Length: 273
Image 1 (spheres, rainbow, N blue to C red):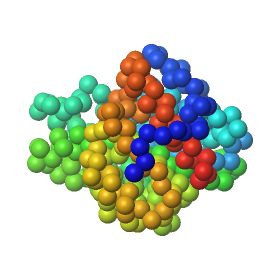
Image 2 (image 1 turned 135 degrees about the vertical axis):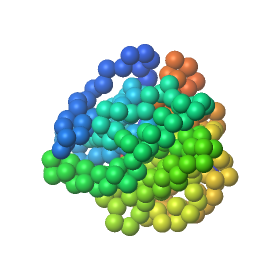
Image 3 (image 1 turned 120 degrees about the vertical axis):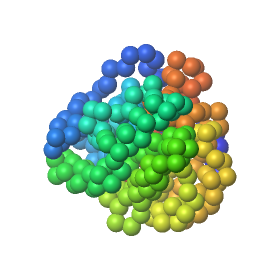
Image 4 (image 1 turned 90 degrees about the vertical axis):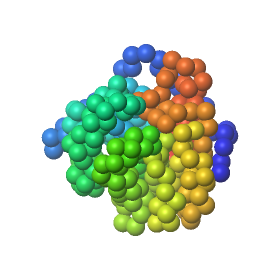
């Protein structure tokens, strides 16, 4: 498994903005759904981002801008749909360590984050975006999967929400990397509930950047089951969510690893898009 190494794109990733972040892109309306879009309109490759449970966090928006603009010689159009329709989970609910927080988490997955309804929207959104942005020739995907400790908390309640969450994650993995996918390359950062069996069906290049919160044995087994070009790396001293809403960019080391992570993603997309 790849561990820390040099990323050529890290040299082009700008220092992450600490504090209030002003996004470089715009929000467009796509069939009633807000989509954050960033990057030059002339770019022929695009990245479709599936955010985490906290929605349009400043860290996720900044990450989208980094992927779109950091390397002037190889830029991307980047799209991040608002699957939760303006109602993401409030970050104060995490960790769900009280009955009230657990109920809010459960209600969230039954409502805005309903797995079957959300999964159905992905291919439809890609198709609509292709029609609207006809110059795009290749698509990559990036999943900031929400699970891990969330799934553990839901499982402890004995509800069916954990099974729904696992189903959702497996469907995203299937959609973005298996036969018939609209994507040419897929990436996952701090992935949730890593299942080695999912790797067997992957048909496109895959990048996985795990945190120290993911089970290292599961990550290793997943990599060993991949039969496609891949980059699997563990950021051992980072928490689940460091490249999205849970990334504390006030912390110098977290900020450096946030920047390095996006540099690794850029290297990966440069090779496969």
